[in-house]
Length: 205
Picture (cartoon, rainbow, N blue to C red):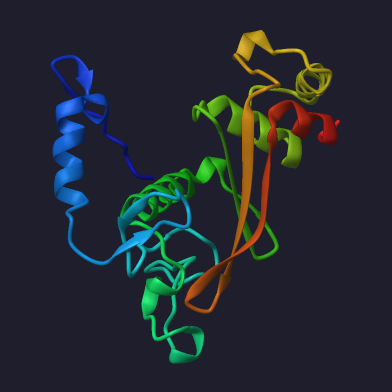
């Protein structure tokens, strides 16, 4: 399993230090390339012609696969090539692929339905939302200290719109579930669920 290292500079996390952020953005998002209106953010940005690969989807190439790619003239329009057919900026492409690769690397919070690999996350990225949602949908894991009775009680409380204070769970937190499946050298999005955590628990209940 991979190890994630987060560094501090003068007691501040590196990824939250304004000077480090500015230096990183200047280097990674250099003003080189075609300017486009990003389909994801709506902002003007530099086109990302080829998106970074996603790794960890069962059945896909071990070297990684892409959600957005165009590898034949038949898939292109108006003389555009590669990612210009679905113009996404460098910042958005970096953000979604980095986040998804991080989620896919955490094998304890990845599940499978047939050929579909499932990941989930909450606004704020608190890990307890992943653990409880997967236990509610697929049953507690072997490593879980939570029995069925505790889990059902927690689901009922959240389904009724009440917080679960012992685990800092709020029914109002936005929650997302993504299903990815292999499709030759690409990945297809089988489903994308977007709702509140309480609504998910209500459906499970």
